[in-house]
Image (cartoon, rainbow, N blue to C red):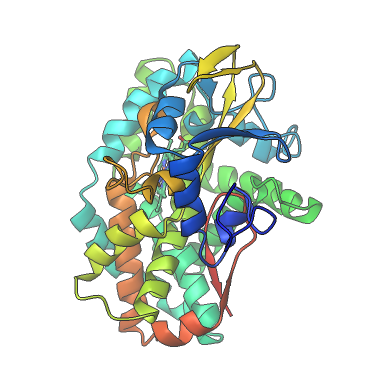
Length: 374
Ligand code: HEM
């Protein structure tokens, strides 16, 4: 049984994501129930650091249900086509070559240079992002600056105010459509956004940046241009909600007191103890033994990255929000630099974290902890 203060009826591994303080609950799970079956949710749950690492390393644990490569709501739409080509959403051998080209490209982006570029992009988007209440402004910056900076770093032509805002909006719409909580309207907007982004990218001539080299390297090993385009858009999507969440949670941290460390160090701490991505999922491709339990093909495992992060066990000091193993995030250092740059840009424009932290809610989500300022 769980603690008396946080009974099971109040919290479960999914509602914890946007609970005001889920960490005592997570800690309890990580230490007392590191791997268990939640019958109500119909999911296995991995909460301990060892168990989380074991699931993410298991060869039969896949990022999508084998029989369902694309979420049913997106299937047959432009958003579904795009989703199906993402390396993030595939374990198949067909995606390995592209992944081998993309990963070093991302690794080669220097975080300090990225932060500098974000500063320059901030002045580009200033005009369009100044209106509204302080909360609306903060939300807009969180969802715009990291995405357009990644686009700019890759060499996409985004350095015009209106274009930058529209690209960020479309990327956010596509990202939102991937949530299991998305309603019909959100899914439709996501499909439109995927179409729009595909057309925009096809017509955009890369400025400088690594995109031309990426296309060449991919072409040389027979990877089709559509897969490259989908994964380029995929990078913007990866940069969207999670980086917004990391920057937003950093604003909350600043709003609740002034930490005595530099902003970049606050971001790193927040990634560890109030992480933007709280869980990820894996799906069994075969019957297997997992953490001492017999699991069946088709079973789903909810991997509580946030619980592993706050478990305080031997390896509890590491950051788990960026995943681990085969699908670990290649954008970790970039994301932390962009989150710090986004918070710095907001602070430089007069944002008041204490005021923001007094009026916010978390966006409805089953895996990301994203503050929405009111
Ligand atoms: C705070 C921000 C971010 C967080 C918390 C985050 C977290 C994650 C996590 C947890 C995964 C693994 C998912 C899984 O194994 O199920 C992942 C994968 C990935 N992330 Fe990030 N991410 C962030 C920002 C970024 C950025 C800025 C980029 C690139 C521009 C990026 C690119 C990717 C890619 C390409 C993958 C797929 C890797 C693969 O499947 O091999 N991420 N991210």
